[in-house]
Image 1 (cartoon, rainbow, N blue to C red):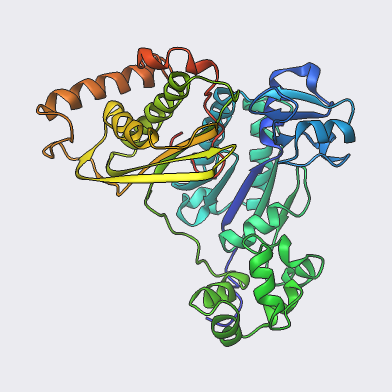
Image 2: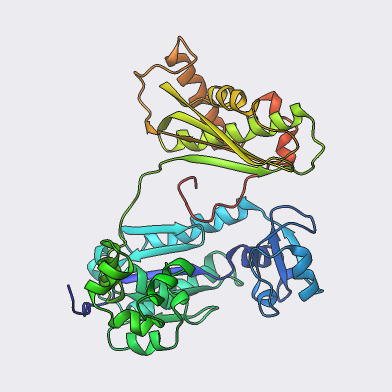
Length: 409
């Protein structure tokens, strides 16, 4: 597969521009045209989740502390994240995309892919650039006038995403073998998705410093000298428009973490926040129709640094209470002066009715009660039913915005 893919470009990548900031500006018109930063907690030391284009224009970046960003942009407004708004927009975008093809994949809460190879003949007969502009207009008509997106079209997911990033905000570009070299000539290696500092070093070690040199490299060089695995062949094909990324990976672990809002919390207050995290992890685990056999807890201490420990059970479990009981036993061995804690469950397997749970003699009763609670929380909102021990923690341990995965949406 050494030649370029000259088939018709049928992959469309849609990227909502500065999604969370734009959604807030759409929902609150007084914020439009103003520099805003979305944060998970309204403090000076909180990190910026995303920023509006007005803020980005003066150097505000994702991950920057709000205090530092405020120095760059004195008029910067901090807006606490509101995940239900973003989930609503995610589902509206997904509904629109599904009207064009049966093969739609959401890569994150603000990025999606339409594979038109499985669209109806009527849709395939249309100019996909025209379809792209139609989707842009539908975002404005069906979600709000302030909504914008970048769209890229190519023969594979990698080049479609590359095309979507060429002219932000609100661009639409197509990459084909005819313009690929011209486009790569204006880019840096780290502009390519998947090429961060480590892969850049690998490429530089064999004299590859630009995307064009990357494109011109032989498959032998990439496979044997740069990546030293089949990954090199994947990159060779990926750059030429062949699809190598249409792969779904099964979930391997489910977790959550939390930075404590204060350093003087009592032991029981910290436990209530751990319990809250366990309930969240349990809900996510069951939403994937999985049970687990392992629990791992980590803490970051002001004096002892990073600490973690795990336990592995012989029987699977899935209930919030079981996860919390196991996590608490681990947590009691953690060092003091905790500033951050986290939990994840692992060794996942399908949730099967016949399997016994770890702490129950009546698995059917436990399963029925757990399912009833999940059904109520799904219908009426997160944490409509939860442990009384976590009653006060909900004000602090808020649901984070899911960036990299849409499994729990």
